[in-house]
Amino acid sequence: MRVLLADDDSSIRSALRLLLEQGLGFAVVGEVAAAGALAQAAGAAGAAGVCADVVLVDWELPDLDAPAQLAALKRAHPAVKVIAVSGRPEAGNASLAAGADGFHYRGDPPDRLLDVLASMRANGAISVV
Image (cartoon, rainbow, N blue to C red; front, side, top):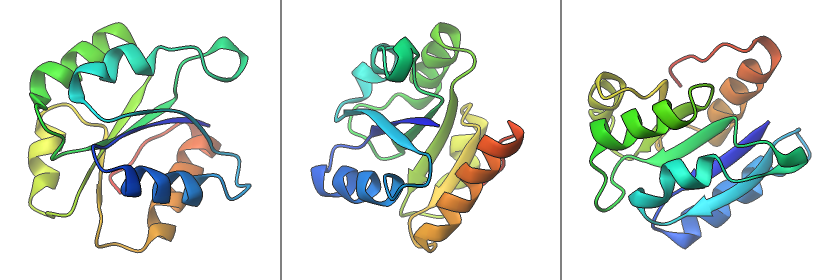
């Protein structure tokens, strides 16, 4: 599964990359630190010339106009799934209402995110994380 990381904090991107690349079949195909690069980066050629399957996006990303950004991303790449990530659990409903396919609370154990991504890979479905 090809994953794009969108977070303005390089240490969080590094931690997510390390978590995902533990040999579990996930490949980080790109990283962005600005909301404006989301749609373009999601479609950039990754492994085998294919765009990302999933975008993990920081819900507090500076300049993130969530409804507009997510709508543009979905128009440009309808098959890409978007999981909003936040340290604020109350952001879950807002992110789903704005068009995210799922939500991950940073306070949850990292294994929970891995389990949901593995489930997506296995059955093609997305669930709220």
